[in-house]
Each structure stands twice: as C-alpha cells, then as structure tokens.
Image 1 (cartoon, rainbow, N blue to C red):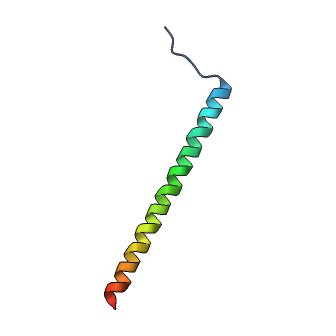
Image 2: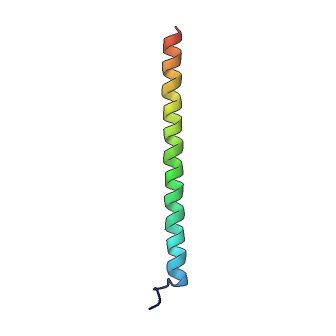
Image 3: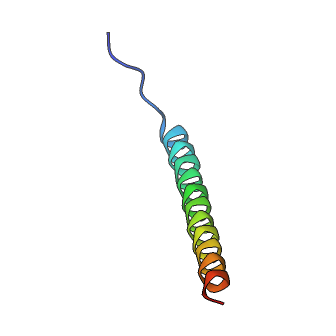
Amino acid sequence: MEPARMTKEEEVAFLRRRRSRNIGMIVVLIALVIIFYLITMAKLTSSVS
C-alpha cells in the first residue's frame, strides 16, 4: 500500500506553517540571548563598583 501524498495546496500550507514556526523559534532564541546578555552586563557592572 502506498503512503498518502499531500496535494500541492496542502504542501504549500504545511511549508508556510513550518516557516512561521521556525521564525517564531528564532525570535524566542534571540530574545533569550538578549535577556541573558543584559542580565550578565547588569551583574558585571554592579560587581565592579
């Protein structure tokens, strides 16, 4: 028995959803990097004085 195949429209919709999830993950990861950087800078500047 052959596996079910997606139609062209389903494939386009699937790829669009995957791309939007990937962009969302990139935004979250960049936000975490910025937060960790800011926390580190705050701790470093407060320990220097």
